[in-house]
Image (tube, rainbow, N blue to C red; front, side, top):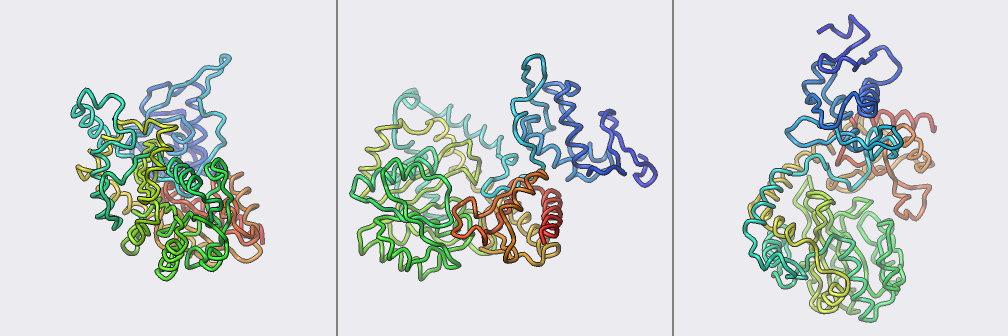
Length: 470
């Protein structure tokens, strides 16, 4: 192959219409992304066509594998390609509208690098292991199990979860205390319905925190924001809030990334018991702690006052739509009653498949693998920030799928996010999640879906934009 130093043009042997201008103004990654996208739109790349692997195409074009990998990942996000681990990319189905060939995702804004927080690497979903689990589930199910059974969750799944939560999260429970839900949103709605029925009127919520409060409003509860500081939920503010219940993320608060201190946890438990109050613990990503072992669940300290919720959304994928909910004994009847009113429970076949995945050890093997990958990406991102943005400060603990980054005082973080979006970098700040002072908002840099090459390019653009804002 001709060296790029001898020729400004590089083309692909398997796709001769791919031609990268090395001396052009556009980055090679942008050129490749645009040409592949146009190839699908124009019909040059037809539905079902298999593209070269990242290694093969990188070799043909004499570029690095991250350049190809980022283009493929972006095209998959936009709906142009299907990616599967260990297989070559496949061109997605084209939808014809008024004679024009487009993809179903053509209206999605162009995103070169997805650095949004709390999104796992969806391309790493363990497809083969999940297929084996589904096959085991279907072949082992009795005829009766295909009917209306186990409204509150498949018994086998609840049994393996009881074992898993005891080993991994320090929660002593049994199958009868676990309710299977379609995810955290359902668990939160059930909790709100139950505490309102028990006389609660005000619920304290961490600030910043979620940006969706439909469940609270539907239960006619008043939401009381309580500040989160470096030690977690500000207990003094909570104690004076007049709240009857509280939502907390003690193991790794989103979006700040802080861990609730042991002193705050003890004070919170005392507050719950003294006032016969309840807490909803969102344990959304406790499996991904990189510096030390994950902190034990708050539920283990006060099983009679804490409702615990976990899901597969970060460990596997949001599309699984399965979660587990462990209410206190004092709420379980009200919660089961509420669930009966609006749900027959999540898909039972998928529940049994998850039971097989956990019971076989495949679930924990996948979590261990992803923990290693995410830790590597986080470490790389921290290094890039240290080298290229020394004025930035990384906050929170070494955990999860994003970094919380403080910028120099006076930085217009909201404007910065908007300008980065114009450059194809999807990024967020704590301002979106109710940060009490938008002028001191933090950047949220997600690395769940970003390759190391994408992180490098994104941090380079971020540094450039920050210099322009000075």
